[in-house]
Image 1 (spheres, rainbow, N blue to C red):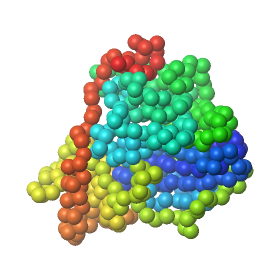
Image 2 (cartoon, one colour; image 1 turned 90 degrees about the vertical axis):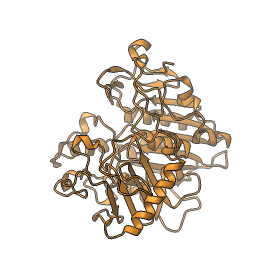
Image 3 (cartoon, rainbow, N blue to C red; image 1 turned 60 degrees about the horizontal axis):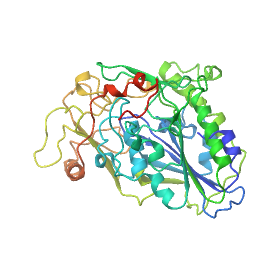
Image 4 (cartoon, rainbow, N blue to C red; image 1 turned 60 degrees about the vertical axis):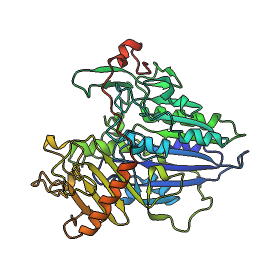
Length: 442
């Protein structure tokens, strides 16, 4: 998701990191691509760091994973870097971003339930230093472009007060790609709409019609061009794509007309906006490159900088409980949670995105696998699954020892967590009360 213009403006040593996450039941086995471009010598001996976060971009949406979506430029970039094939993030926006920014699991920041809605007085806790805070302490300038989605109800939660020297982007979870208008009607009692685009703390009113992928790329280029070369920089680019609404400029509407499922076709067209985004004429080489360019080890979002740990877990106690409690001396299987240790994956509670009361809380397969299912829809009370890495067969009945071991581990992690923070909407957020713009209201 690095534009050709962006790459052509790379004139010093850089570390590129591409990260993505999806909304899949299996917790987003996604990819991380890293490459270092050593084109010209920088005045600083330390590399610049550019981290690009893709929104809702999945494991099977990249060309080299045999996807129907063609991504030749991303494939080329991946071939010059390292592919983490067991790279896990959270399945939705705020928890993933909070993990990266704070280096903490979301159960330790209170952000384990859903997302931060625009009208909620909520945010990444202020006692959690961000990655920008830490990198800044190391002598880097720090810049953020694109989506924030970590709270903004008070000035203290804005990116410019969370370690970033500059910020250009939007504060909420999604918006119109062209008008930059965001509406929040997640609570049927309220409906709020307003502009959501800022340059540092100032609203931007004159970019209507400017497609966000292009707009954020242009801003990233200006950061690279204008930075002080006497010190290294950290640039965090969180593109809006491929998050809903899946809007694209008109010239990208035809390449995937052969895809019958309209949602999948719209998604592929949105990915198409990255085609120009990833073409590069620069030659990349690795600093301290590992011998293997494909890394099978488990890695998670918050472990990109600190030492890695061997397992991955998440839990959400606010999601509607499902079924009956199966054991009295370990983790409550009614709670939505998941853990992976080695090759084993355990899932409890409601496995799908929707609550059990919806009647549609099972795993949702890709459109071309619409007749397949991993979760038995006929057993609406089932709340425990044990899988191997491919997630094709539930082995919970034949592996009770493994089930107990992983449930005990979930119980251990649950005891270290803090209660979820998920406040009611606050009508004082209404953009009409703030010049038609989303922003702090307390």
